[in-house]
Image (cartoon, rainbow, N blue to C red; front, side, top):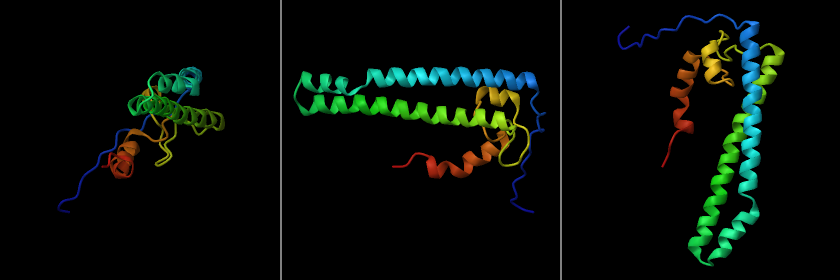
Length: 143
C-alpha cells in the first residue's frame, strides 16, 4: 500500500506491583499536599486587598492595568494548580478502584516510569502521542 504510514508500538509494560503502587500513591499524596499549599499561598498573596494596595498607589490607568494583571496571573496560577489537583484526585480514585495504571484507550499497562513522571496519566505513551497529534488543533495555540 503506497503512502501508508507504518506505526510501531512499544512493548507493553508489565502491570504495576504493590511496591510500585504504594510508591506512586505516596508521591500523589505528597504532590496533592504541595498543590494545596501553593494554592493557599497564591490566594493569600493575591487577595483583593493586594489589588487595592497596588491600584491605590497611583490613580491612573497604568497602575490599574498592572493591578489587574497581578490578579489575573494569580488566578491563572490557581486554575493551573486546581486542574492538576483534580487530575491527581482522580488518579487516587483509580488507585482505589484498581483501574490505575491502565490506558483508557488501549487498556494496556502504563509503564511505571511514565507514572512516576506523570502520576495522573490516563494513557500509555503510544496513545498519548496519538492523542496529542490529533487534539493539538483543539487545544493548541491560536491567533
